[in-house]
Length: 276
Image (cartoon, rainbow, N blue to C red; front, side, top):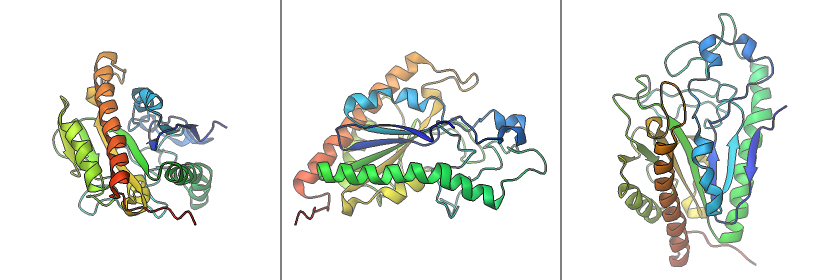
């Protein structure tokens, strides 16, 4: 069995999570899927490659190796909707973003299979995130989580019109300190890309679960429009676009790290470690 995720340790307070780039399927799953499902159209294509630079910043990086069609790592195990006012995809997707069936007629994911997938794929990923953030906070006095995603620029089922280039989410400020978000957005707005905060994508389960500004853990989600680094029709990686975008994200991450440090220095992180 392929490892559930890949993980690399860094020496900075930043953890980058890439939950939707994986393309492996559970044993026997592909045989039950439609052609549309086996194409894995809702993958966050090439995000791992785009974020190759993260290790150079000293970030720890965790990246899922299995598809979101096995189990969506950015959903809670209770499968509750993320947005009351928007369409939200589930923990065990049955339709693509385009509304096509993922499984053949008569096929479904049984209750037992759901439990097995949570145990085998979902839980190990989240346990590693949780333990890593605690270690980073113990070492640095604070920890930062950057949840990295991408999506096609136009997905009528999920949003109207064309998505902005960079879609940041801090769960309406609940997952990341205000000063840190302000510094991050200042740098983002200096880029050549259109930028929004807490609009269509305000942060999924990962951002909401682990972001705890008062506890010294600050989390943001970045949903990228794929047109800025790849060809959405052929799904091919476009180096010229990707290099430019990666350079901009690098600057934003540096601002994120620096703002986190400043929040610790001023006591704005809200976290006081008990060393007794």
